Length: 54
Image 1 (tube, rainbow, N blue to C red):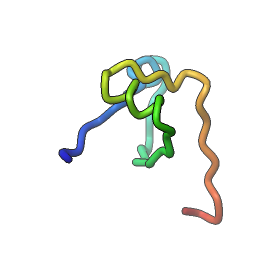
Image 2: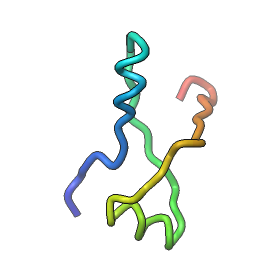
Image 3: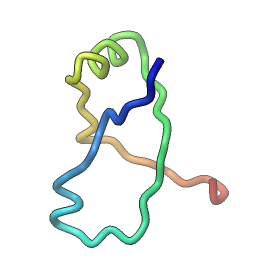
């Protein structure tokens, strides 16, 4: 399967100066995978936690 970007926060780039970017993976369930593949994914209330510098 080809790699592709599924989410980009354009508003963050407009509202803030981004010094560093990070690439992260996400864990999805069946219905979530189907939505993302169809281009209807929503990460609005998502968050990330950095553990032990990973």
